[in-house]
View 1 (tube, rainbow, N blue to C red):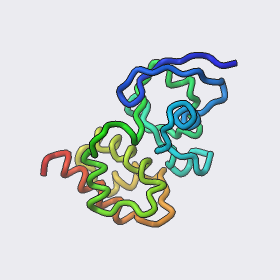
View 2: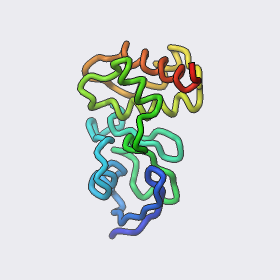
View 3: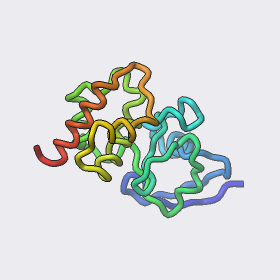
View 4: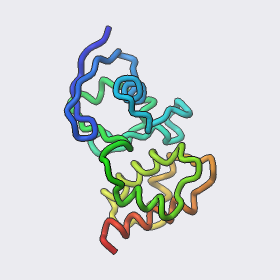
Length: 154
């Protein structure tokens, strides 16, 4: 039994027919062709499926699609230009294979929205739910620090 929901996706008003068990990642991929959020572990433990819902990071592999009704959903595909966080990840080589990068970028956006000048401990805490199988953690931390400076215009 499917039902219609309405929400904002990357700034655009949209609607979708969703099943009660459908996850947000499934809706984004199958309903909107957005593949930046990827299901990897299927348990909400790796961060590859990170999506921002009303500014808060959620595990899209566990988050039911029906819960985004009347919400603002942001994915890595949001916007046409690179933002300060994305640019910092490129400049600091905060990625290797790129599989986990969308989740790290979105989590970094939430971090910098809440703590514009994070300490290294803040960064490690916020990103602790995101796993990089390539081991680019030093570069990711450097990218977050660079993104904070870029956002401040330094």
